[in-house]
Image 1 (cartoon, rainbow, N blue to C red):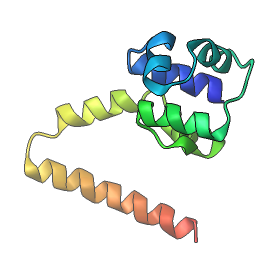
Image 2: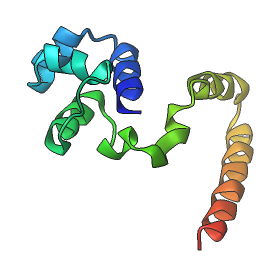
Image 3: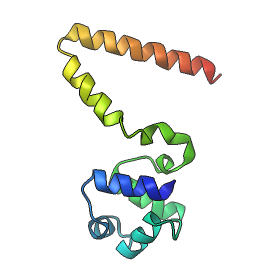
Image 4: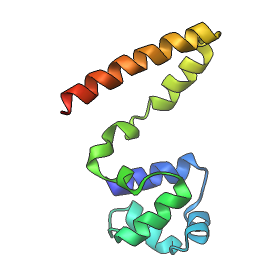
Length: 108
């Protein structure tokens, strides 16, 4: 799980392993080992990488599977193109609120 998400985020941010290593203070060799599943980062190392990649360290854990949705960026772009007016935005936000409250009720 960590290996796929780390590599995907690094590539999404257009960083090489060397660049990510320099910015985070984590060896690029070690980053390669994490991405290949040969080693698992310690929590403090994961926190350093998460900070550079601008995600919560918990993103690398199972419970954040939805964030790994490869089509999420595409959906966001579709929304940006579809929303033309303030009224459109209000409708979309109202729908988001409906789903948010529905899921909040389920989790109680």
